Length: 430
Image (cartoon, rainbow, N blue to C red; front, side, top):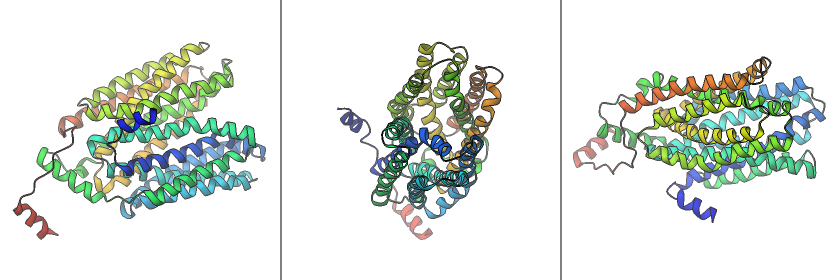
């Protein structure tokens, strides 16, 4: 029944979207399965805590360095080669862990995994922008986000069970197996896109419906681009800041491992179920800036309440549920906005730049976590509340300005009629 409802709700989305969503889910399911095992496995093989920390830093650094070059290249060579490269790297490197017993090799493999992620994320996001029209991108990116959340939600549970039942090497084999499934899907079912088709269609719609709109390249590195970068930076900063300290915070107040796991489920399930639905509502809304403002203020209050919720597990669970719902609103809005302001001929580069700023936010958040936590156990949450509020105010203001100057319809535009004289002019210009 759930599958029938899901198919009915999202049957209007094209097949390539479902393929890229499925590939994303298999990748993050496998990576999620190794999350609770990877550091313990490395420690058992002789890695120190410092070397384990370097594994995480190597992953983020490689992702930060390679995202922009890969993004620029997938604008020239297409999205599909980089998606295939990322899935192959993910599959091979997952299996390679089984044969490692050196701390240096663990760090190198983790860095290479960062390279694979750097190749995948900009190409996948640009792919979605290529195949989905503007008025459906909120829902599409909601499905993409749900695939990521679903993998992160189910992966650790699967990895913990498999590792406990069959040993520490089996989650890596499981990860490689899911990578093979994703690779087969990408090889046989994922076509290459042609951004020039969507670029031409968007130019025609803009010229007919909003002739006063400036060329996207004129403001790409202006206020819209910088505002979007700041939005993504703050969101990832907050997620990394709290994600790093979350387990420590709950453990310090006496919560069990089962209770800690429950908070992840409470946060992950609503995000998995509601993000695509909220994305659809966002596509139909004329007030996306206001929705972003409401969601951002809501999650700001949630983070502020966390600071004083220590010792009250019931309140923490309730706040986790509310946080998930607010994040399910913010994520598709930010993804839709960033996709809309990037010119069609530079989607890979633009998505890579946005991912780079997002990765930078995550790196800074992770580095500051322990420093802030030493002052007061509620300090990271108050810091997160302040940062996300700033990002919300800036982001909603930028989106409001963009909506005022670019009033394109939220419904599917009608087919454009081309006269014979226009057709002759187009043919002669080729």
